[in-house]
Length: 116
Image (cartoon, rainbow, N blue to C red):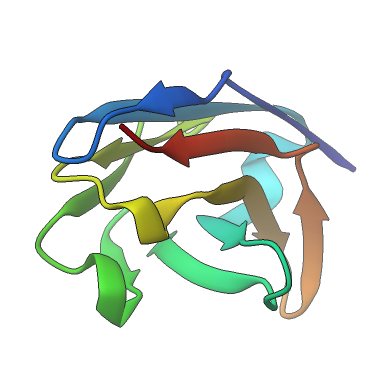
């Protein structure tokens, strides 16, 4: 089992920056991928960024060049640096962790609102 706790999101003006982090506990050694997903009102949950084995990264098309995902050396924390935020980045951001081939754990979600 893996437990995930996300940092608080917040209200940010367009063009601003925000960093989220997510701390994992439990069976940390079994985690082979961590990532961030988001869900806007009325929309499906979508991939924001994912990091596999602490090295290989994947980003959603809408955030490429603006967001960066990293993972701590201890592999217990994943960070999401969000720059040049846009109103369409607004949503609930969820941290995820994968163990094995297809076993996922989720955080409780944190609200990010980009608005002037």
